Length: 80
Ligand SMILES: [Zn+2]
Picture 1 (cartoon, rainbow, N blue to C red):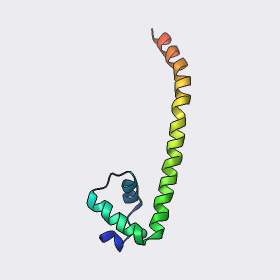
Picture 2 (cartoon, rainbow, N blue to C red; picture 1 turned 180 degrees about the vertical axis):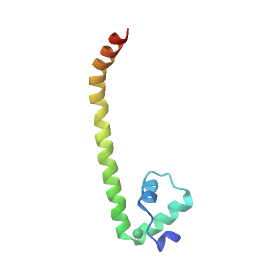
Picture 3 (cartoon, rainbow, N blue to C red; picture 1 turned 60 degrees about the vertical axis):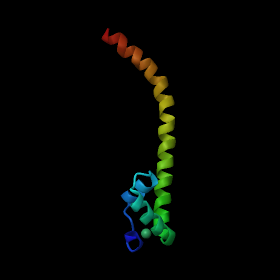
Picture 4 (cartoon, protein in one colour; picture 1 turned 135 degrees about the vertical axis):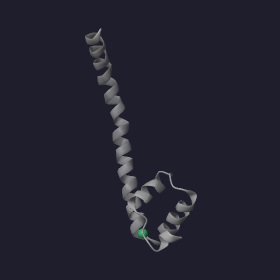
């Protein structure tokens, strides 16, 4: 498809990785990735970034739960 001759943008790669591309676009990106190692590298970089972001975000709720329990009580008591 059209992506074979031109690199999909980082945004398109992101949407491909997040499965928010139209089926036609997915086919084009996949065909391009089969022949383009630099875009595979870009996709892997995006994936690594997203995974580290998810790890970071996954750790936050624990911290927030512990601290917000105290904060909520303080806020409630100061408001009432
Ligand atoms: Zn490419």
